Length: 91
Image (cartoon, rainbow, N blue to C red; front, side):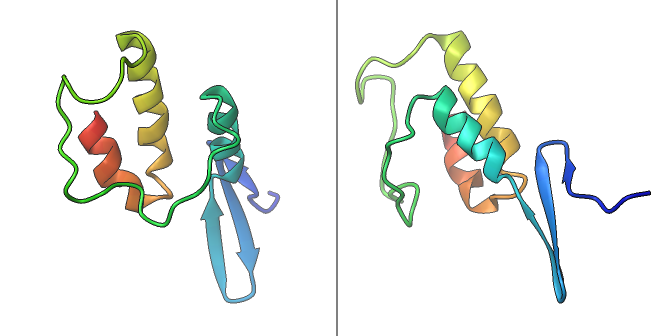
């Protein structure tokens, strides 16, 4: 058998002292899919005091499309546990 490099959308990188996993390619494909390739990164994905409700914000996407986006983000939390709270709040 050959050394594992990519499995179920997760890239496996071996370095001398550890094994790193990444979803870099998956993240890039999501950025293109959501049409947000020009977005600026932030250190904290969500303000702790933010309260979301039905009347706040602007008109969003269709419910089916929204569910697909959330499903994509749920899979992303496999290697990015820091996003788990945000994704669970949005779902």
